[in-house]
Image 1: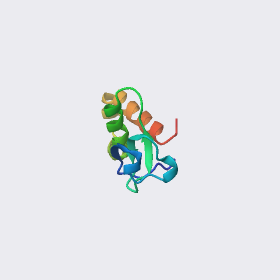
Image 2: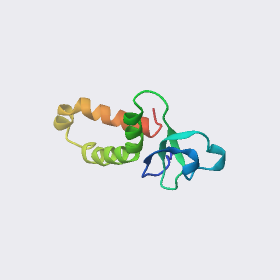
Image 3: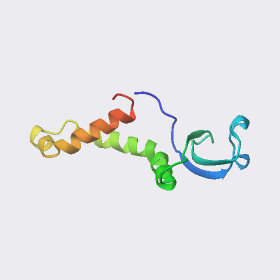
Length: 102
């Protein structure tokens, strides 16, 4: 697994001078997600900014939950796995994507 910045991640909307960003990154306005050490993880400028911020901030929690569910379902009996096949494949692909395996 590729290492991502550990969570929790938090949404921050502020003027850059008001936040604990490194001096070189301060200018105008910061709308993005920071880690627990107050370093920027992502900035969002386009689209539905609030929805995108929420999704990005939730990413570490979503990956942790997905991995926990995967551990419970990966070894299901074939008949149960067949019943959930589409979801099983989608969850596996999402985890692989998040971990840089695809």
